[in-house]
Length: 457
Image (cartoon, rainbow, N blue to C red; front, side, top):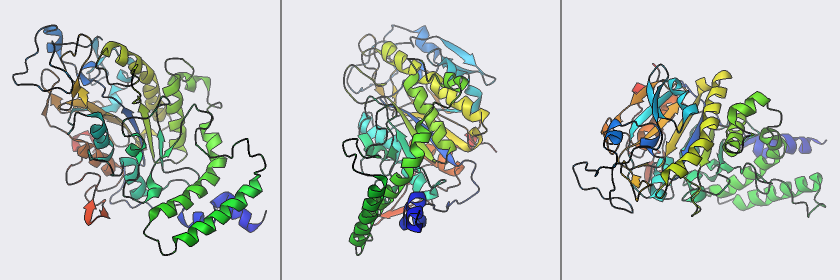
């Protein structure tokens, strides 16, 4: 092997050597170094999962009257509707969780529940943008892109930011949810479609072009790099060109690293069972959660895992307008064991100490019925939770009213969640900024503060 071939194969070219590893720009000692985010697309109902309200049981079927006019997204307020599932207290902290999520419930002593979330839109697209980027408008970088920009890479052989979408499709806004926005384009997520014949698109030449040998491919990529770099001269402010060069260099390394990280065949039977990777109801999410752990332990900083796709009817997301028991029942079963399995696996491997686990959705659902079996959108009060990476387990922050309608104690927006995550990663959210169109932009805009009461002292 020539020196040039060695540099291309193992470093992705001379440009790869210069760009492969960034130094972490932390403002204070970090408690965590990586994040995994679970996004329940379509709006998971807080009053059917983690927000227990006895009044919904006591007044079930009665007219719902919160004492004010309620304007809903696509319906008129129906009657008081309790959860179709029973409730029980779990763990030493005594947290109430519905029987929809019994495996997650067994982990409550490791989880901090934020019960007083609010959103600025009750429309899926803008609200999904808000939870991911901090803004309800398109064009802003996702949290994962900000983490990539701030902290850089932990490994040369895998991307900093990876998205594992639901195999049935993408959420509202599609890949814009994990884009780099106005940050340099290299910070957008690499999408891996687990369970498809080509999880990373165009990583390998198609079978139809058998004449493309490894040597020919390497020579072609070298030439392409030269052409791209020549084209970039005089266009240094266009980050897309540099990102394109880096993507080709990363692709060369992924050809070696991706097959190994995506192959869960070597995992033990006990581990696969822990995630539900071989059972019909949980296999999809179980495999993605298992691959997420493999990505994290090999140096990926931010992994986003989606549950639910915006693909019309029959519903395959958490947007349960018509039949909540059916939709939430199927999706709850599909995520419960895999998510809990990941928490347990990270803990057993000592990785939970420096991995933030974030479970989120774009908004909640109303305590009244829509029709006879569904619930409408509720941006006024819903639940998210965090675990690991310096988070105090077994605690609850904030509360909604007696209906699970509005946040009434310690209201929280996504800005506070993002500020908390950045704080644990060693980054001051007020100092993480990027100049764009004459404005110093931040993930947290001009808002937010770390939720210190859910952070370990």
